[in-house]
Length: 172
Image (tube, rainbow, N blue to C red; front, side):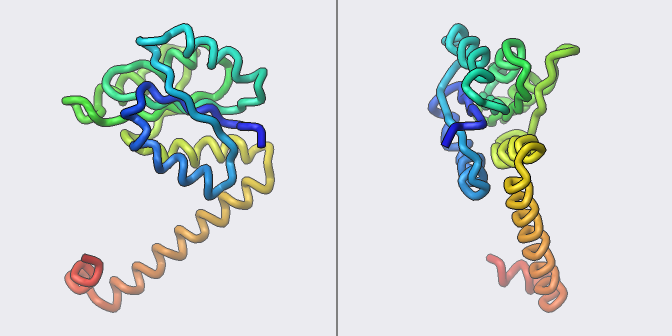
């Protein structure tokens, strides 16, 4: 199936933190491709991937990097596609540097930014964007949200039965 989302990682050390994204895309059946591309170590590759993405059928780009790497911003500067930034922890600043470099974009260069290490939310946001044109994907997203709602209700029933201390002991 033709990939609709391009996922760029600044380094291979970022891959373990992206497992949530992979799991969500697999669950929702969102076709994607992934590549290592550093805005600082290989800026020409990043520019080429971003510029060529629309012509290849890519509709959303997710860019994940740690430290103060500016991968999402470099991508946003070279495409009109929606870009979702995933700031990753791993530096002495626990990802705050990555968060600031991802979220603080100049006017006209937006990057939708999820929380530090929240690759799963990047996948959900990408799927919501794609679902604007794909009703079946929208239905799959709705089923996931309903399952989450039902899980929370079941946990609440257990909390009401056991009380806070009993619940904590039962879930250890």
